[in-house]
Amino acid sequence: MFKKMFVQKRREMIKDFEKQEKRIKELKAHGQSKKSAEKKTKDTLSKKQEKGRGGKQKDDADDDKPIELLSKPKDYIVKFNFPDPPPLQPPILGLLNVSFFFEGQKPLFKEVDFGIDLSSRIAIVGPNG
Image 1: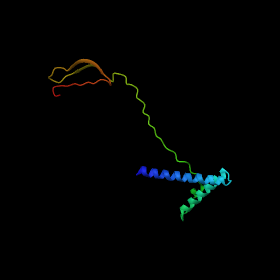
Image 2: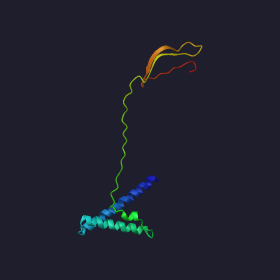
Image 3: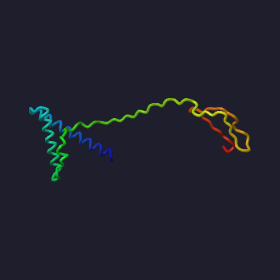
Image 4: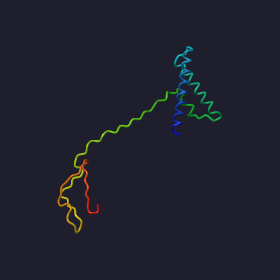
């Protein structure tokens, strides 16, 4: 629903902008300067806004705002860039003088030194699988 509304709103904005540009070109063609043509277009926009308000009371804040010409809608392109992380220094895990055993069993490791890095694959498998 959002995409449909976005596309529709964008078309309306482009259409309004094109109408404004056409009106300015017509006024310039009739001998008016660009500045006076833009001023006349602004006046037309402000009259339309007042007409759209209908019987509503005017706000003092709205009277102070200058009417601006419409700008051409821009296309937004978002690009993501994820840089490759630097390599980690091996070993990630360094163990010194390690012993491992279950009570009543023969030791599995006895005073072993080893390191594990990202490229290592280690599996310790016992009688239960």
